[in-house]
Length: 377
Ligand SMILES: [Zn+2]
Image 1 (cartoon, rainbow, N blue to C red):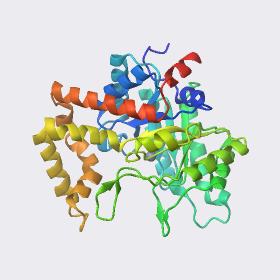
Image 2 (image 1 turned 135 degrees about the horizontal axis):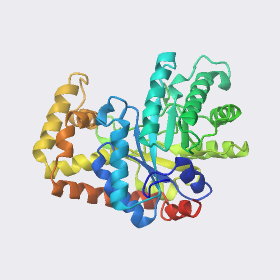
Image 3 (image 1 turned 90 degrees about the vertical axis):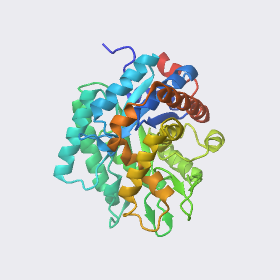
Image 4 (image 1 turned 120 degrees about the vertical axis):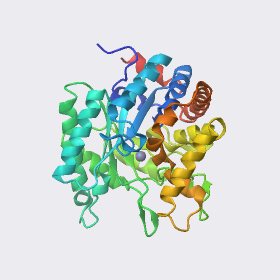
């Protein structure tokens, strides 16, 4: 029997959200301390939520967060149980495949096995890097992505032994730049991709597309962090509408939300077309921001380590940008110190995470979505 506050299948949440004017927040909690505040806000606003880490953040050797899948899963389950919150999914974000050869596929299956054993209830296969630019048709361009996604989805299915799970797939590498700037997914690519997967008996709940966002911070020409205003809303709507016209039942996952003003999300995002919204770097910033005041010595050490290590690889860049882009790699290096901070620091992190989550859930139209899901269980 399912434990009371254990994660739900991602599909149960995503299917229920479909048709409503809402986006489910998926938080990449690279530093797990933020999770309790996020869950508490989810509970108080009745918002469904996903907790996730990507392969780069958490793999069999810990990724750059220092958390193997079981560590991450245990910390999220403990946080949900402490808060007593029940409508959430444990999601494997960006299970990225870059070459698609046999060795990489085998290694990926081992990661999926560990995630399934740890109790993950949702998975994102990202084979978008396997785009064949020499392909003569959309189908040819996407052939490798389709092949690898199908094989790995089959592996997840057999590994979950009849348990339901959420499935996300990806077409169009997020943040990839060509000569004319960011390369965006076209509606016919999204349609061809999902149709081919459906023909192979793979039915994803959400599709991640390249629609103008990048992961992490957005910078101006001088290396200063600026608001991200590049998400192409008309293109996103066009893709969602093309999928609907072709009767393909899949929502859109918006990646790389950090830096996008929440008033813009609140008023202008096509909620219901986009049903899952990933927020990652933002939560790491919350922790480091608290450290600046509560743990100045630790923050200083993190700064020094990051700059010393990454300055030589980034000639001509300002220290601030080098730090902002690479401080994520310090999480593993300072793992012990980060998780050993005192109660006052933890309380400040929890409260900041709580307050920021309220604003995200509101902007995403997520209030009340937890009850929607519960009604259907
Ligand atoms: Zn992403």
